[in-house]
Image (cartoon, rainbow, N blue to C red; front, side):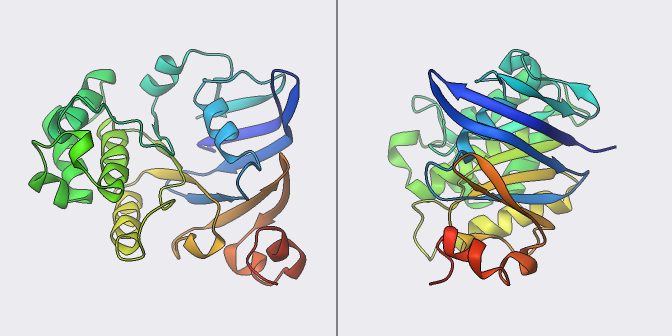
Amino acid sequence: MTTLAVRDLDVFIQASHILRNVTLEVGPEEVVCLVGRNGAGKSTLLRTVMGYLRPRAGTIAFKGALIHGRPTHEIARGGLGFAPEDGGIFADLTVAENIEIATWTRAGIRTARERIDAAYGVFPVLRTYATRKGPAMSGGERKMLSIARALALDPELLLLDEPFEGLSPAIIPAVAEGIGSITRRGHAILLAESNIHHVPDFAARLYVIERGEIIFAGRPDEVRRDAAVMRVIGGAA
């Protein structure tokens, strides 16, 4: 069964037509990347899947059940985790509290302790900062915390919005390795990214979105051979 199936999705924000007939899917334990320039519609798609926005047309199915139109908290309890572009961490809570709070949201298969240990296992450095609060953390640490908190939900599918955006080149490999370890734990990932060069090697498939439309679907090596698409996303002259 396909983990996530988006079909013919149209989304408006006020009078603006943001997503146009978008179709994509993510299989079990699969890493799929959604690549597009800033403003192409990546975040709108992820937010629509999570229930923050309602589609005008089309369907979203998670594990075979339609979820579009449902409240966000129900979608999360069903097994979808979300790490937004801005991190979305609770600034007044410590690292440990941010991770622990996710275990209250959903009764997963694993115990709360196992889920917390898994979150720290993906990004071990967070244990060092367990008592720190958001304002005392770097941008890279906040990204790690956002992903770790989403993982503590024990989701079948993680939606990661621009996990590498704004990070220094020195921290990107650590974040990429953490994301890779999540896939080895059996979680599927849909990762939105504006930089084609940040697409991880372990990505199985890739979609390119431009002006709210999917203009390419295939393997990462295939898109790199498509000069026209690479020009659109800034990967080639």
